[in-house]
Length: 311
Figure: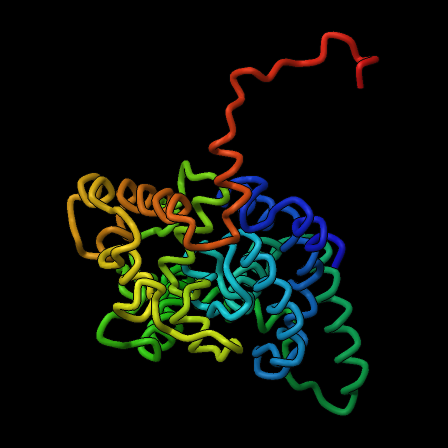
């Protein structure tokens, strides 16, 4: 899709607009194009539930865009992408917007004309005896939306939370990634506020632990990769690198964070920002090599060309 491809050109995992601005670009430009007319075509399904075959291609596009926002890898769980960016699952977003439009257009003159025409056609088809006309797809959506209106927002939030908790339960382990242990009510977008694109990516990778460290690479069976850290003491996980690996100095990081609990470090805005910058500085991930070089480059002696002809 052209809109998502344009977003891909604007944002990568290490440069481009911040995670916040990339999210705004997706929500304001890509998603509206992708779901153009959804308030209509989503009503014309049996029992009001969109078939998976119709949603799956769109969900793939959304996942691709969310990976552009977060810098996440292809194997990152969709639930984690949606939670960290606070972007609704696509089917819930379609339902919410469809219901809102159905209620907003209830008294529109066009809707009244459609009802009159539908009634006239039904009466003409049933000359032998009148029976109540069944509601059109749009009328059924409107009736359901009106009944659910008082608790619509809470119902959407509840459905999303239940999905996330079901996925989080699958990831349960003695030490699950921070993305699954952060309380649901907490808005994870606060963690990425003020970070550069590279820093936001580093934080996201640490919070999900879908990251290019040996332990994860070995778990997905990358050829020739062993889980052991180069220090030789344990598997190279996020926890090991941040808290235990002897190859990296971390005293200042822990002083800034005020704790040695990894989940707390990655769930507080200030300490999470320190951890993201520290990870980039450790050189443990090659994808941040250019970012480090740019940060270390001395630009004091740089000066603009005095004459454009010098170009």
